[in-house]
Image (cartoon, rainbow, N blue to C red; front, side, top):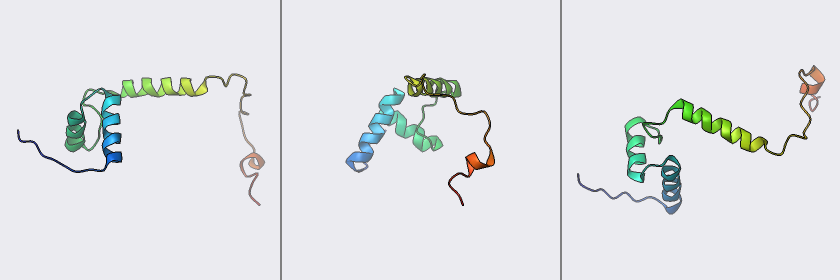
Length: 85
């Protein structure tokens, strides 16, 4: 297979390299996936992995918020439109 050189700016290159590293694949694999199916995700990535990552991210975001009071279960019209005349 012949090599092809494509020129992109440094910012785009850094973003692509970071995305490949996050997914644990080479930049070449990331670009192949992007070209093949329009997304830069790996072929082996499953939705459960994405859900697990999402839940882990939510847990990390909520750390240290135990003291924050819960929001009310229901809202009335005044609560929703408090900043409208």
